[in-house]
Image 1 (cartoon, one colour):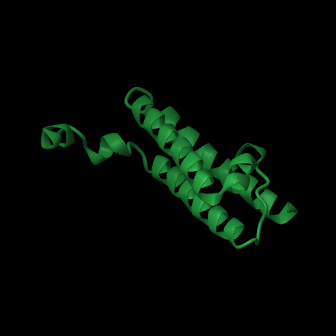
Image 2 (tube, one colour; image 1 turned 120 degrees about the horizontal axis):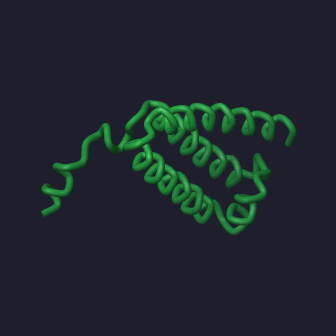
Image 3 (cartoon, rainbow, N blue to C red; image 1 turned 90 degrees about the horizontal axis):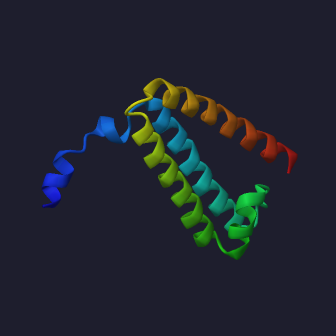
Amino acid sequence: MAQNLLANVSVKSLFPTKALILLLVIGFVDLVVTAVLHAQGLIVEVNPLMKFFIEKGEWLFAVVKGATLVIGWIFLARYAKTHLQFVRNACLVGSFAYVAIWITWFFSA
């Protein structure tokens, strides 16, 4: 049964563009770095949406942030079936914005 489900899933359907992989890698690197540095007391989370969760605990933060990344990945991979170029462009812009915001917050904190 499980083999039949997996037989219909291709890597291309999971990751329809390299730009989506880039965005997910940036997100998961940010997740790990933020959780580790916060646990060591080296940083304070400045993202107001995630600050609430990380102050409750790094594991809760990791679960919530990881879930948002996975949910975004699912929606983007599905939408790419009919709008591949849009998803590619959105992921590239999102990746650039993600890094730019992270660098800005990092140096302003």
